[in-house]
Image (cartoon, rainbow, N blue to C red):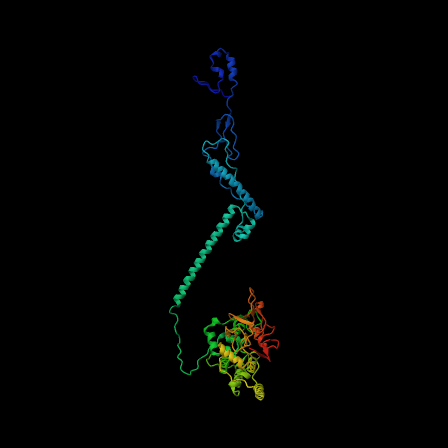
Length: 539
């Protein structure tokens, strides 16, 4: 036991009894004093948390969160108590569970950090019972794939909402970085395009030179270069219409290939899918653009000869043996080929009596025989040709005689350009030949002698003032009357040309008559068509 301290001078020790300084009690026996002093107990020695024993009087309680007796000293390490612990990898828990748990943990940690900071800001000496916030809890980890899914899907973020603040900051940060990278890449691509354009322009300037200039003299026949795509079409049994072989059309294909429609198909007769595809004219689209050759109006007699000779040149090129690259086309050593048979075919029609005037009468048979040579390998037969043409010309002669006996005389023919879009000439020619036509008209809208892409925009009715059933929209046939707020209905042009349509357009185009809206092609001249009379289209 530790003895109590002795008084000095007149001061009174807190451990000295009150009666010890009273003179009246000086006679008290030493045994009584001994007994009074024995009631004073020495202070208890309590070990400090630092391991140093100190005399502190009654024991101070330990602060629960700080783990030391109060008050919290000035040198206490508050920063260590607000640092988040390492996360916990518990990927077996579903993502939704970890997100929900982390939301609660963040709320708990934020409250603890706030309490610790408030305690830190209290001036020293702090109250004995003032504690810091409870220990912080670790958050659950997320995998990289989970974070990337949240970054890429706003819907997924909404599904798991609310997200913990730490996760939300990470998602927003990654999105911002990606957006920045995208913008940098876009700017870089823009700069590359600008540099490429500048480089292209630099190369372009001064690059247009006239190489191999050609001097033409009056009356000199010019050389016609058959387009490769034409040769491929003929070789693959997909020949273009005859009027595609005029010099003007060939020049357009050679000089402006971007204006034509092509498609890629496997060669004719290729049984193996490994065979490389070839680029051919898309005839369905090109016929809508340039028209078909099933009526004689597609070519004048002079243009017929021009196109036929160019077609013959193409066949001669295709009939040349591969080893022979001489300029003069040399036919193969076989007994016959397409070029030989077509040359016989062309020579026959050139010598037909009254070629120009009879051209419109025998043209249909000429086209039929031409396609037989190109598509079915049928050889020329002079007797067959002569008999068919003779029957055709005789039938027209008999018809003309019958008309004369009946006193019906067709008006004199008016010289005109069949593809011209002049309104006056179209009307006059239509009135003059309305009931005496010898071939089908070319226009799918009004039935007159011009291509439907050349149909005059101000003509919206037939000659009997009935409105046209169809009209042009761009370069396509559409139904003229569209319900208010309804979609424009497109009409299939190939179907109305009375040709086989592969229906590749699906439901985008209707198989209806462009003249009346019936369920028959316009050029079939069906008796059911309201615009057909005596197998002729009434304009």
